[in-house]
Image 1 (cartoon, rainbow, N blue to C red):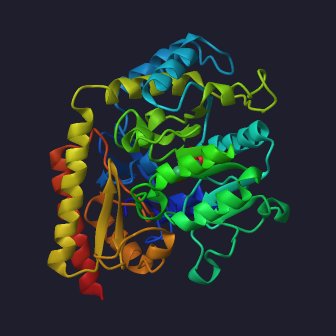
Image 2: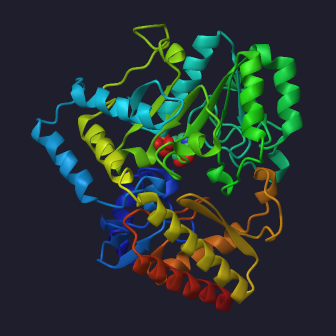
Image 3: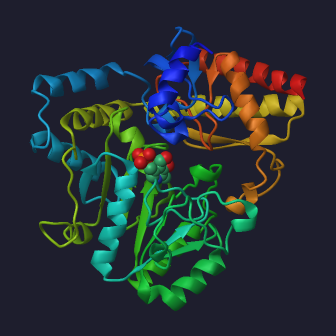
Length: 432
Ligand SMILES: Cc1ncc(COP(=O)(O)O)c(C=O)c1O
């Protein structure tokens, strides 16, 4: 890899694991991939070697790296004197544009990270309903928010119906207010909401479970959750941090035609800058202080540079044909990977919706994926070896559940990625 032992030692001495976020460790290398710069659909390591980027900043770089419209918008914000922790006209204009695009949003608040959005959305739901319980789904990730950090990816012996904290250090008292369900299980949802609905503040989920292999909601499932929560006076929250803007400006709620009460948005929205938001029905959002009692504040909320980038992001994805081209290339990439797997006789497949996909090694091609339970036998050691081999062939695919390309990836990038993936799988087979 194009970074030196010396740099790794320096990073490891001052940053635990040599990183600023644990997820940046490439599990096939045991270290992160240290980069010097990024542009369009490519990233460059410290020695200047280029890689087709299929990590895309964990899904944040949906319009590619350093898109000229994004960088010039940020420049305009810088010229305003790094105005920070103040309001100006740009905030409300961007909020208006998001509200016009995303079905459930009538009002919103900006935050920096996705973790903050789910934290505040859950607190708002509790304040609004006056109820304690939150329902979440196994294998659905909502950031490192203690209220929801249960059964992210438990090992089989700790999986549902057990409730398993995602990491040590969570206060035990929080666990009693979080109920975990298996995704796509109609009976469990019906049973729970019918009997305990009056105590449930909110049901929160990834409408498409990208964080466990791009597991889609079964036909009627989101509609069922919508009906049950409405009947019980509980809120339905779509965590669209990852699913937002993958299929179009209206996010997954528009794609599926199911409108939640609240949603969270992030990652892609900032065009590479730290920008997230939670929003929803006016009646609920009016409970946020100072209109109501639900607290939400923060020095850096809605930093102008990120707001400017967010506005440029919406301009870019609003251009005619933007999603047709992006989704066409994403489909070609996934079809190409499936062809390689089939040709080389490797058990696995891609699962794709919109501009994000998972590469599932292990679960047989014909298995129906309904919940995390169906992907627990994922062959991570093989996948980690494959990801490490990809780096040797000019492709950066991170050791995580989901991958994708951006609007800046070209046909040549897709061809190059497929060549690298083919060579990487051959390496892995040769090493077995
Ligand atoms: C669905 C979902 N929610 C929340 C988060 C947390 O977002 P952040 O990393 O910005 O805190 C993530 C991050 O991957 C996510 O995928």
